[in-house]
Length: 171
Image 1 (cartoon, rainbow, N blue to C red):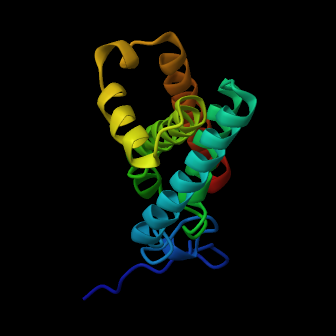
Image 2 (cartoon, rainbow, N blue to C red):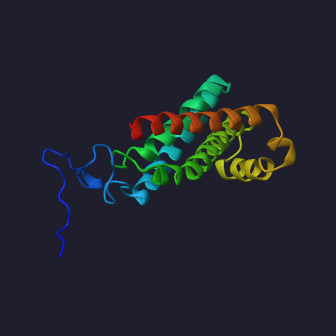
């Protein structure tokens, strides 16, 4: 009967996988995705208010602000997750962050347009909202140059926000 061969004296044994620095365990890998989505919705509302009020008071749109809103929503969604964040968890939030960014910019456009209509046409809020909701989903509005620039730069901001958070979360 032979005995199992023993490693030579002074050999180094690797610790279990969970003891490697930087390797997330199952409990560390995620955090609460529901909390991330709720914080993302809060960022949507905040971004819409900022976008709408800035457009109303300056009577302009700023594509840099669209980028910042996209980055802010991405950061807000990743912030409740425990570090290090697993790639699968991080990538599962990319699509919601993009949709949340687009929603925020559209809601901000609705806010500013309603405020413009109230000021310029002297109509009640309800009438302005119903008119805006009839006009905004039309093909003319969706293909408007300013609208396309806003959405494009918002997507750029959301993508850049996730890219920078990806580098930071995985390191």
